[in-house]
Length: 91
View 1 (tube, rainbow, N blue to C red):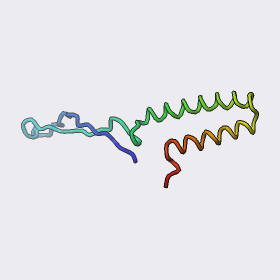
View 2: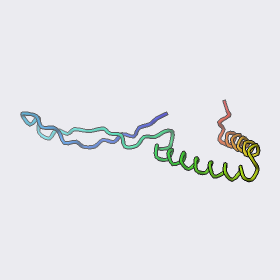
View 3: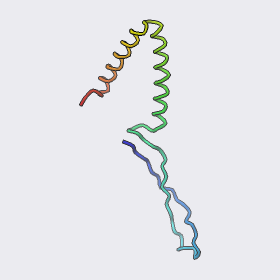
View 4: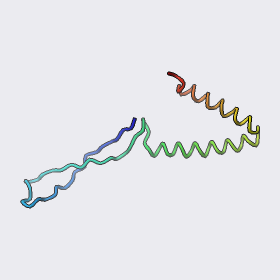
């Protein structure tokens, strides 16, 4: 579910008392990006914040236009339609 992209970076070797061997190369592994599926954490935060803003705007618009029960009905229809479209209701 989570993927980590690791990159090798050259790291200067730490000198020992006898200067270790000639030209020892060390490698340091660090995490460059964290992925969830095919999306990075940054894009998931963007999707979430954008969804919250758009959802809140639609909610306030629909409450004024069709009332509470109409908004709930439209929300359920949108939920079912997107679920069927992306295939999340399959086994």
